[in-house]
Image (cartoon, rainbow, N blue to C red; front, side, top):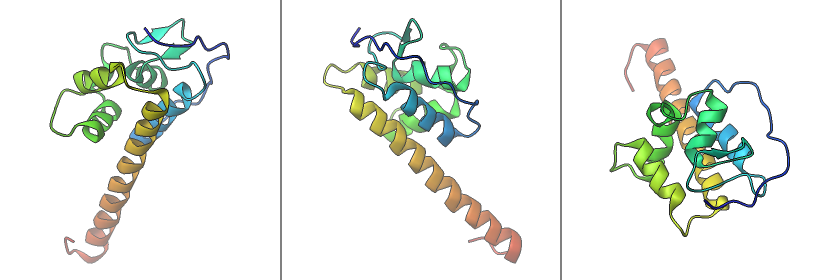
Amino acid sequence: MVHSGASASIPTCDAPKTVADILTAAANLIEPEGAWLQGAYTQDLRCFCTLGALAHVSGKGATAVGVTPPAKALANHLNPEDSSADRVITRWNDAPERTQAEVVAALRAAAEKFRTANSVGTERSEVHHKTGVKP
């Protein structure tokens, strides 16, 4: 288990509602120095691995978080060839060369990718709704 034992209290937030919000909240949770770890979901609710952070901010249990849309969105961002979000994220998070900065950046990038994909889809749906023509 790798961490530096964050001493600051865990940031609190209103329950995020969208996939992108959950990914961003998880990034915010593990961004402070020492708030990220490897080899365990959490330690004393002071530091979290990637899946542990997703579980914490989404209110899902650690055993269920791997099947949630935010975990699937992150896993798809990391490795679109593997359909097991839990496996992809755990192996990626726990790789010896992985850094906290990389984890935070990946969560933010996956959130932005999801936002962009949904805004394009929303725009297309609005065009279809308004015009009756599928884009």
